[in-house]
Every structure is written in C-alpha cells, then in structure tokens.
Length: 430
Picture 1 (tube, rainbow, N blue to C red):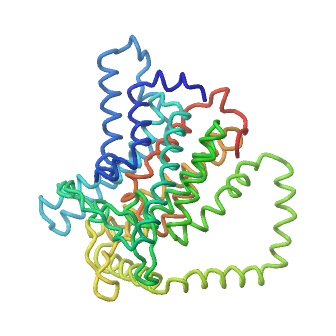
Picture 2 (cartoon, helix red, strand yellow):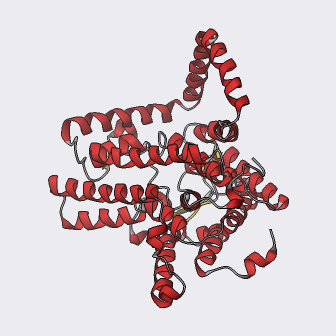
Picture 3 (tube, one colour):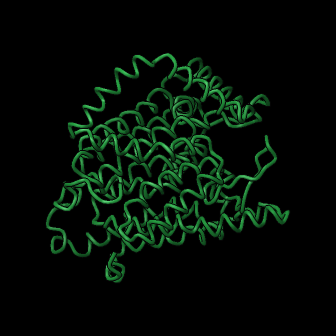
C-alpha cells in the first residue's frame, strides 16, 4: 500500500485508523470501552458537521440517499430494539432511572450494529485504511501476549487495575485491565487481550483474520494474521478455535457458487454425505461432546442459563421481555440471566420482538452478501464476518462486544455500497 494514502486521510479515516492502531495503548489506559462506544458517534458528528459546513458544494447528493436499503433495515431494527426496551421497562414498572440507564446502554450496544454499517455505507472510508488499522491492532497482540506469558511464568497477578471510567456504567468486566485471566476449572491462565473476557478474544481473532487477509502489503498481512492466530490460541475459546479453522474454507466455498466446478463438487459431495451420513453424524456428535466435556463446568452453567432464560421468558414476558438482565442463582454461579447467548438473551431481555429485530436484518444481510460475494471480494469478506457473527451469537451477546468488533460492522457497511470496477472480481489473498 502506498504510503501516500496515509498522508491524506480524511478526518473520518483518521478516527478509524488511529482508533484501531491505538487499541492496546487505550486499553492499558482503561479507556477502550469508552473509545469503542463513542468513536462511531464521533465519526457521525464529524461527517454531519462537514455536510453542514460544505453543503451542496461538496455533497451535491444527500448522503442519506446513497445508503443501502439493507442498512436502513438495520436502522429500523435497532430502533425496534429501543422500543422493546422502553416497552419492557414500562410493562414491568422498572422506573425512569432504569429506563434512561438502559437507553444509554442501547446507544453503546445495539445502536452500534446499525450505526457502523450506516457510516460505512454513507461515508467514503477506504477499505485499505481500515484493513491497515486492523493489522496494526492484531499485530499488537503478539507483544501483549508475550508480556502476559512472561508475567504468568514469573508468578505475577494478571489483573492490573480497574478503570475509574467504570463510573460511566457498563459491564464490570470491560473496565478490568488484565494481562491475563485464570480459568477456574483448570487453574491455568487464559488471555482475553483487549476483550472483556477470553471468549471475546476468540471472536475478535476470527474477525481480525478475515480482515487482515485483505491487506495488500505482505509484511503487514503476515503480522496481522500471526497476531490473530496468537489471540485465538491463547484465548482458549472452544468456539474461537473451531470458527478460526473453518471460516476461510467456508468463505472460499460461499464465494465460488457461480463456478460450475463448485456445483459439480457439491453434486459429488452430497451423495457421499448421504451414504456416509450415519458415521459422519456420529463423529460430529462425539467430537461435540468431547469439546463440551473439556470444560464441563462452563457447559453446565451455559445450559442452565439457557433453560432459565427460556422458562422465564415464556412464563413472564413473552412479547417485550424483562427489560434488563437479572442476577442468576447459585446454580449458575450467579451469572446474569440473559447473557452468554444472543438469542436466549434477547428473548429474556427484549422478548420475541427483540429476537426478530436481530434475526431479520442479520438474515437479509447475509443473503444479500451471499449474492454479492460472487463478484466482490469486499462483499465476500463481509459475508465471512456475518458467518462469524451468526456462529458466535450462540455463545456471546453480540451487542455487549460491539465496542471491540466495530471494524467488522464498518466493513459490512462499506461492502453494501454500490459496486465499483475494482470490486467486481474475486482476487487477492483469499
């Protein structure tokens, strides 16, 4: 990538690039949750000010008219999330203070799932700027992970401090700054990097992988991929390991559907799977059981949380949900009900309305990108991101982690722009 690109960054691109490049320094200062939550709104404010000051001289067409209908669907769906939140608070009489607090939480979580695709679709942010920033962030995991390994070997405590920014509100874990954490089941260290907990680092490693593969500079691409691999391995996330290994082959397969050889291969594979269906099924189920039994305590807690969320949603608040997560009983180690799973969490907190408010835009976006990915490398990468989000939605709450994987949301918005000549063929590193 020509160095001149970084000598003429727009104000919006500077926020994106330096927001990513400074991820670890900001994390070590305790401000990453704040940065990730407000950077999207800051980019929107800068762009709105630019439109206001320059007017039709610079923007002859209203930028909102260029926004993809898929992005408008996300905006509508996330507004429905806010309606569900307010309705649940009114229905369960949670009070004005709780409603205001939860609405601010919506702006720092669910709203970002619409905000960043809007910014990517509406503002001219060059993909290569985003990719280079991601490569720097991913590569920074290498020295950070090494420092954590040395601290663990030296017998030092992994927790550094609790950020005073905790006063602004949010999950407690996002303000605890750690070199590494401890697995309570094994007593061994596991690394969360800039995530609030280790499985979040697994999610981030998968997203970093697909974005770093788009880097044209071989040195930065290698550093970025190595950093993503480091995050995946040290996070010890079972879901992260599985998705990390599978995502590139999945993307290659999904991006090759227009080629006759792909359909020939599918025609050969399907009969083989039918003939080998029983042994393949048994192998998959046995492997799945072994993965679950590798951390039985975590599996038990997650399963119990899921049952509690479903039972209470169905019996107490099927339409709008409970409005907030609730502290669980001792049987789930007091883990909050409505966490560890996007869909069960949505049913518990925002009811059936909230569940469809995520399911519909995510499904339509994935389907749209599946068609676009046959001609566009950018869309193929965005499709891979959607696959990762869908996969991880069964293990994490997507809205809580939006402050760390916002580059992926921004890339989805970029991919939803009208096709340009340089985006019409599949080529490059994937």
